[in-house]
Length: 173
Image (tube, rainbow, N blue to C red; front, side, top):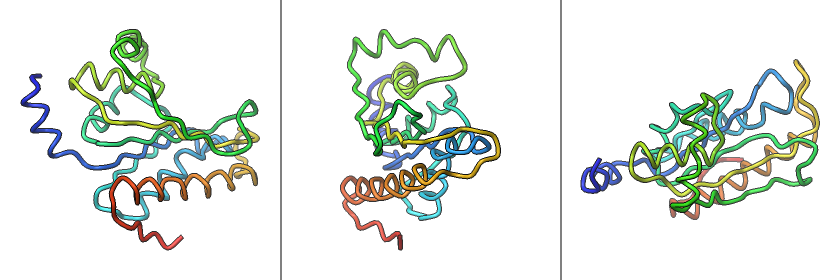
């Protein structure tokens, strides 16, 4: 794809993509999809939100249409006690080394960014939002730690939308 084609497509990008991933049947592991569904319920026109069980290469097409992406996932026992929001740092060397999504059907955020860059010639600015969790047992409800993390993640995403979209996110939360 040449740069002229991508520039034209970039003009038609949606502004923001939130991808929450994890297994909603395994207790706190479902925090990512829960956050994504809550963001979808805000019905903001320039925001697309996806709740998925895992990151797959097919998501590169959605990522390519966004200006900004936030990946939301559970973070287990080794995680800090509060949510962690980190930029996904990419450069030519990192993108060149990151070929895992081409060899495997399960991806990580950085791998999806590399795949998006490889397929579409560019990728959006992205962040990884990790929510602290306590248990991932089948059939359990969210722990207090996970619920606090979900609430904090939603406030953080609201701030991002207000900053990057430069419009108030009237969310009623």
